[in-house]
Image (cartoon, rainbow, N blue to C red; front, side, top):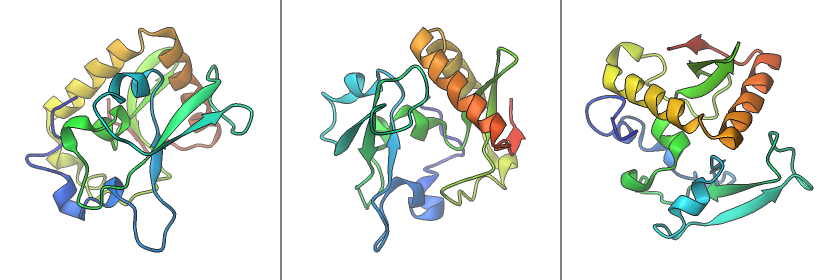
Length: 163
């Protein structure tokens, strides 16, 4: 997952729009993939909340999920990016028991690379696909992605299938 989507640092194209909070707006954040917090907590001093199924609608089978805040206004620490940041704008999507990489229609960020897919490096797409194939071997992660995929299909939130 360390292959860049384009040559260079993609954050420089948009001023790290998705990697920071913006003045006057609610602090940005994101959910971590199951077990990800435990693997990064010793490497990062991160601001986070623990969301439980008691207070939040979480994808099944999760009972709790870590929500981290993106507060580094000069851009993220690229070597310590969470999985979803490394794979963005691609999302893992399971349909008919098959893994696809998709781009969602409803985007919180206006990533300029979504409309410039011809610039994407094939090594990025292949690396992301391999990584998600390995991650989905874990039953909890697979159930989590299946739940997100089901919700995406119900909401007709697939813009394009990349692979």
